[in-house]
Length: 511
Ligand SMILES: Nc1ncnc2c1ncn2[C@@H]1O[C@H](COP(=O)(O)OP(=O)(O)OP(=O)(O)O)[C@@H](O)[C@H]1O
Ligand SMILES: [Mg+2]
Image (cartoon, rainbow, N blue to C red; front, side, top):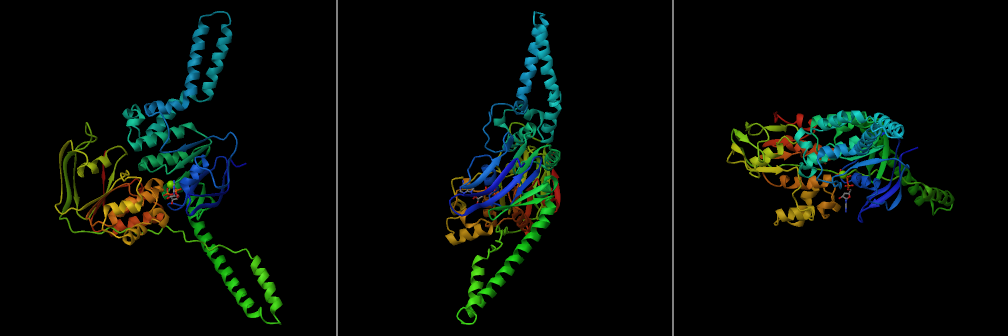
């Protein structure tokens, strides 16, 4: 029996239908991915699964007693506890059991009447602890902590002062330790560096229970998915097998659906022509009528809808910037103390460079320091005097009450409505999304909005901090070509190796 049964679910946010008859089932132990273009409704589906939203129609049934965990950015957890307490908190019951066992042994040691009873109770608790693998906890928690890149000092910090990315990883780590029957994850790799993605892949591959995850990271999906649910035009198709198999099969299915639809359209046209020609003729009116009745009962195939999500990024170029666009000399970056050893480097104009290094090492801090947003501790940096910089920042610092339209209008008050709409259409924002508040947009829609100004402003140096996060494959492909075609310099931080490796001329590794 399926542990999760989603049947004929309908849901919309009051404008266009989003989910229209979506169905799928998750069986015990199945490793599933939910995929689809930006804005297709994947995160919404997740919220329906955990009961944060209710379907307008249809049912979502969890098998009784099935436990699940959900990776959510806005989780309500006690932010004053340290990451270590948070992780070990998973085993609170076991720690309490251990305490109780110790207490019983102490009491039994007094040798008072009835002490045998206490002893046997303590032994029973001891066995239970053994069975729960209590004595391996240290190494288990340790492996998750290492795998997700927590340094010793990080795990002793309260969750509230960890960077957003680290906090997200703490949530992920806890979820892995909890070992629920089903893990629900919405884009879990966005905050991970390549080594950590590899760790997560390995962990998930060996995960004894089921999971359902949303991701646009194809290399990761190829590693972990055994079943793919494809959300398209409000419905979900199930593909059993690897992600590669899904990619092939979905093309075949689409081609077949188009063929079937066209064949049916040809048939309908032919029949209609016959009916029109014969319905008024005494000799053949009967035949025409019966064909008309048959046609009326024909179950009509829907046109395989265009998937949408067309995106065309282009980054306009200003002018040349001499030999080097950026020179950095013994630059110390950090807050109260330097994060890493002093940095010295030269970035030749027109080069494409990847900044690598574990997360939390200081890549974003470096970028923000050379932009003057964070003071340097010591050292120097110079840009070429003609440098025109555009920055794509990892975080969202736009007012979330604004719509993409209002955001662009605030930056470019002179642009008329048509121009703003056409810019937003080019970065792949559909009509409905253009006027919606950013806080109501999907992750991909927000990322596309953040990229829009870079497609307007002329520049010769792009600083891109995790630009592929949340983007679907079409958008990533377009971003890739836009960077490739861009004559200026690009410094990029990107955890998706497949994306950056083939794009850059050289890599700078912080360690
Ligand atoms: N609270 C809301 N009010 C109105 N519209 C919303 C709201 N939340 C989401 N939407 C819209 O519903 C659509 C689906 O959003 P959802 O977040 O489910 O997409 P997604 O498939 O997860 O996309 P992505 O791949 O970009 O994360 C989007 O077009 C989004 O703008
Ligand atoms: Mg989403």
